[in-house]
Image (cartoon, rainbow, N blue to C red; front, side, top):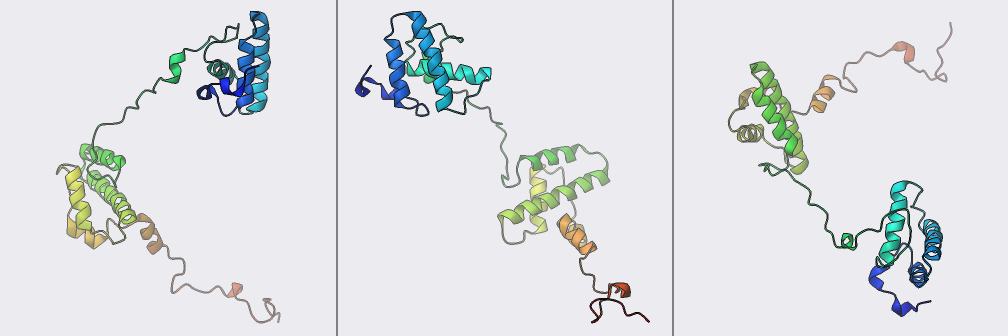
Length: 218
């Protein structure tokens, strides 16, 4: 059996350990191909025990055999269930992901805001377009507040909408201020449905007295 110093460190896969590498080196010295193959199958079962992540699916099974060939430096002549992988796969770089090349003017708003603006430009009905601008303005203001602790001005939101739409979308500033059109929808719901309204009538049937919370019988 080979000595530790004869093992190539670059071929050791940490999840299996050095002892597994030594067993693979020993199998390579077996002259009879049939015995080499039998020993390889035994090693695969041992690799499953060492690495519990490996399961009995075809994909994980092929990975185990690929790992075996890798640790054998692709120099293992056996009759395995899967073809021996090419040695070049170790140095093969993954394909680069294709990112969208379009630039975002205001990155803190994100790409979805830009898409909403493009959809709003296509609207022909003035009321629908105004409604879309108001919805977009609310979203943009909420995004701005997460980036900036100071309250952002409505005029800034309107200017950003005009810039991102290249002048196709705009709304009257005084109208926005008067009706608080860009205020958060959550804030509106809270103001319309207060938790503790000031003049809420008291239900006498629910009033508890000092007699253990029970109503006094006549």
